[in-house]
Amino acid sequence: MKKTILLSLFSIAFLALNAQTMVISNGEDTGLNWWQSGSTVVELVDWHPKEGNPSAKAMTIWISTNSDQWSGGGLSGLNIDVSVYNTISLLIYKNVTGTVRLELQDGTKNYFVSANYTTAGVWQKLNFTIPAEMGNITTLLIAPFIDYDLSTIVGEQSRCFWDEVVAFSSQTTGLPNTMITKEIVKTEIFTMTGKLLETLNKSQKVPYSSMLKGMYILKQTDVEGNIACSKISIK
Image (cartoon, rainbow, N blue to C red):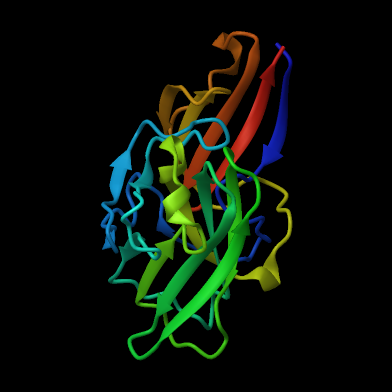
């Protein structure tokens, strides 16, 4: 049985072999204690849109016409070393375009960085440059509707999802020779629509020979929490 593997890193930045990354929040086992920022509630759900992000869980908020403009979620108790990392990325899904703002705190001052969500109704990875003058990041807040006219909200425009919040160094980006250079401890096999088919531990091999013809996504996690995905075509 012929198999073709197409490498695509959807949940972290493209990393050089020696690049360092830090998973801040992934919805499954890291950074789950998001708290309410403004007039909204953060939920951890498994029913987020799976196309483009087959992760088991993601964070979500629902806003209303009476919500604060800066409503979103916050994550504290962090220690992001700004001498190592200079960029934060996250996956986000909304049904309206516009600015997404991060508020970064180092214990003495608050810093605001923004990125533009350009295509409604799809998962998009946004990169935020960490201000060079700030100290180590202790708290992160996300405001996904910071520039949106809340009085115009209709239906699903109120919903936002985010996932895979990662700190990395943009100075060392590049495409590695393999998906993950460290020991893989977990492999998850998904359909192209995001349905989880099987979870394998580090001692189990991907059962290519028994898989039906078609396209699949493999999500692999290494011992340091780095995540990569492969699109696999079984013919």
